Length: 541
Image 1: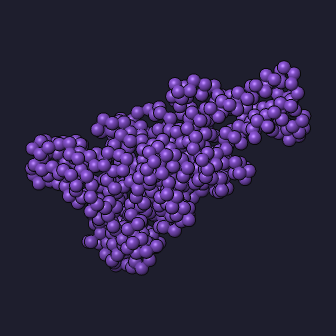
Image 2: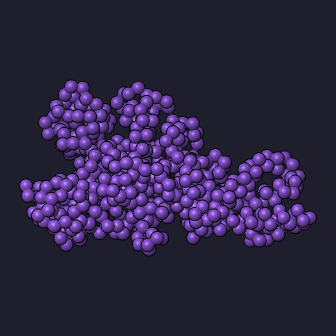
Image 3: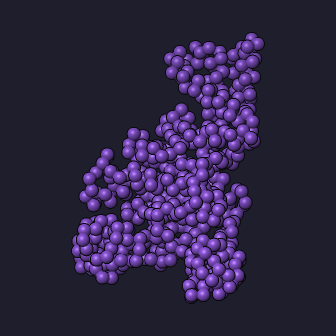
């Protein structure tokens, strides 16, 4: 290291080190703490340290780590639990106990784990950058290994190997590995972006039926404290119709992350009866970890998600929550003495957030495959104020808006999605897909929305005159709306009802609306409304 520490202000450290660039990763102090260059002034650099820097002193050594903050990408990520710097938490626990000590830099991938490599090329052939050399079986997926350099091969591995070993050697002595490093703040390349069209089935009736999401789409879930954001995201992570799930707990409470890890370790993937963790990557950056690492955690996680997208897989990225990420960004900006924007957030909050979210989508990969990266992002607006900057910045780029309602949560209605305020811009694309499987899907959705909207319009009148003061047809509508709310929109995430496939969803709502139409027909024939209401109540038991 060819520099030294000149000033320390919290997690912001000033060093005197020539030759640095913005975004370079540096190592600071005798413990070689990891940091990132965020400002340059001649040979003086301002560094945001990602680790606890207690004990760091002025004049300690500092220097470049040889490039930007990167993650290791290769076989072995699935089933892993990492912090915001992609350090494996299990290894950190074994080396330093329950609390992470500073200066720990274990390899993210187990370079000594044995894998079965199946080559698809032979020695004495020419390969170019990006050509597939072979595959490695990783859980339920066939993990392709691509060439990072071109040239004539003189040796190709076969059978069992570890990641420290090359899968091939070129004539000029270069080693082609099964893993590589990638800068977290740089999106991975692709041939072109494609319009999303295939619905992403979450298993939540309210979402799949009323506000569908498509693969490659973006949804935000804003809600106040106690409205069920975390439980909803974790339920979607269990049952979503995707190949890989990347879940980042950004500033989450430690007990919630511990519960998630314990539950996911015991669950099975309902699609193939294999352990759920085999298709899951968890980035856990809890609220007691340094805020700088929290800011980088979503970029670390989305880079790993893009890596599996590039294999032609459907990947779901879940973040809980972006508000705590934005708070970390605000704290970093304040320590750098930058001009604050609205509510103290930096003026570049919107552009930084948009640059991250635009990494979602359906793409044609460089290898010609089609992969998708979908995002479901939780937001925790203070006081459930949806006009605050983070929620508004997300709304500008999100295609689906799932507003969690405090009133519904207090009535124990979960998921507490407000069906009058939520929306999805992917409705037409999803309807075209479901119409091929269920011809009545769109008609049922329109009828359901009409009944729920009619109930909202009648609720204030009913509170004044009572249910008996309403017209007979309105009383039947109110009863059907209650059945839809309780028997269809409500879903207990801790019972067998936690997941409903589209066929079950269509069948259940179809039964409720058919019953409503039958009662209306009986009413038109002169049947007393009280008898019909009692008949409907008996049928619902």
